[in-house]
Length: 372
Ligand SMILES: C[S@@+](CC[C@H](N)C(=O)[O-])C[C@H]1O[C@@H](n2cnc3c(N)ncnc32)[C@H](O)[C@@H]1O
Image (cartoon, protein in one colour):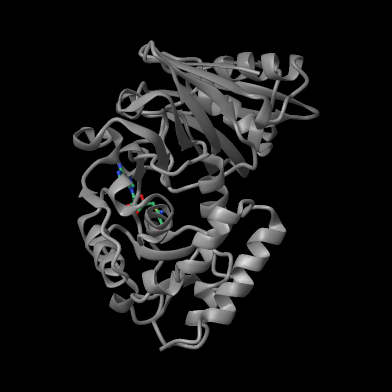
């Protein structure tokens, strides 16, 4: 027995006060699902002050384990695609690959999903199974399908859900293909980010249904979008704001950088925008849409810190460099990345640099069209 009840009550209270948890129906569900049940394998916590980020395990029963399960924090549960907390003595410096999302974001997204009783939902990214449990408690397990890419993660989620007597359809596979066998869905919700909304999600959602997903990318910009699916097979909607961020779907992770380009080659011109334009998260989202295959790296070169956008898919690169009070940019390869970035940044600034919640998106089989 754990004495989680006061911790759960306090979490639900703070989620309600914070505005993430808005409706009595979701509040009742949040009160009924114990998050620590999905974290019995422990989690990784970041080591204070470690650069680059290092992670140390916290196992069930360790000091602070139960309290952390009811803190409004994301808890990393797998690192580097295979490593779980029980595998580690000391610390590990690799990238997280699965986590339990912070409850305020989980509940905010469930509220944003606008579900009603009887609706059928497809969830992408089962993770620990916590959000799957919330959906199943609200809509009935027979109406919930959840897809997890990682077989080990999926087994742990199935075990945790089974322990609580919750048996939704759990699928191990690439959620970018949706799950046609249980379609059509009224709602699709993704708890991993995608570079572009997969066609399958739109095709497997009934007309009038919603797709709620975080659009992320290789420049690290990320925003939550809610799209309505139309009879003609297109989908449209808006970003919801808040710079929501999730780990990218595994097939959407960036390719290795490989050999760096010769930054002395290419052509140079005066730049309208400098690399500091990318400090603003909305501006970075705009540039990411304009140059979706670009990754950003910082190189120490000739006593400078050089910012480089590198597109290893086409072999293009751009290096904006401060030149006194202004900026120049040197670009190489078949795509002038900074030209594309500046064109979209100029349009966005001309419109008054609107926030993400004023962005609209229309997705057709040919791809997305953005407006604001
Ligand atoms: C942030 S976690 C999910 C959190 C989960 N909703 C919870 O409440 O615990 C993201 C999950 O998405 C999974 N994932 C990544 N790419 C995926 C894909 N293409 N299809 C299905 N799941 C994927 C990851 O393995 C990871 O477990």
